[in-house]
Length: 268
Image (cartoon, rainbow, N blue to C red; front, top):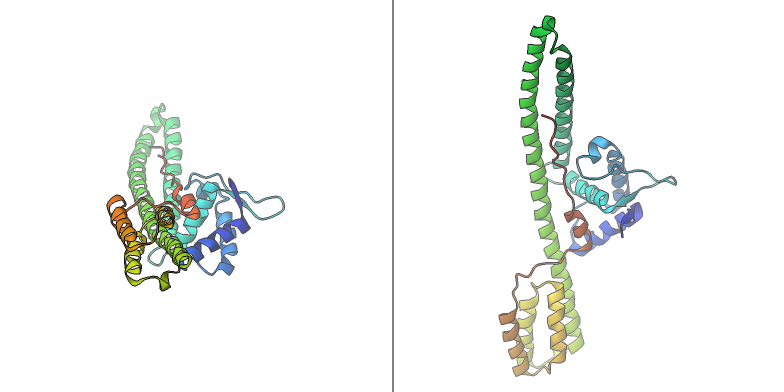
């Protein structure tokens, strides 16, 4: 889907919350209001420019529609605004404002100095303007470094959060696959030794991605569950699979992960 409406966004967040079993955002009843607030914020060029997105526009019949990059920005801002330690988004906004205002001052000083450059009567004033430009340029460089540092912190924050919640989501899905198979074979009533080796298989694949866990379960369905076959299968998966297999992203995580913060260079 290339576009999302407000209702779909709220439903996607709701689905995500229930999947990871974690309350990382405010109550779902207030999500719609928060989405509107952030959408209004991102209508402005100065805010939408921080992320590589087009300013969000309200539809003629009311409400908003979002492309994937706009959705990424909204969701990340929601997370940042409710971070318990510090509001990185507010820091980013404030720093961007300082960068913009400093850049504007440099432009105006430069334009003024160009008008005075060839006028000998204004030589002293021209020299003063150049001093101001140099001073403001140093300040701009400092602000840009601080801005980039906040961008890096946001990226680190997002990667850590993604890893944390993605792992939880995969663990839940893999657990469901294992439990469905247990029901399918009547695990609780099975012979004790077979059950013991199967339990070791389940413990081993519990840390696998759902896709790999499903693949192994499908292979088990083809086996006659004798002691020797199950024991052989346990040795086989220990040898041929790793518990550190690359994870496949959850739908919403994929969207958020593609977010690119705009670290564009400003005029010197």
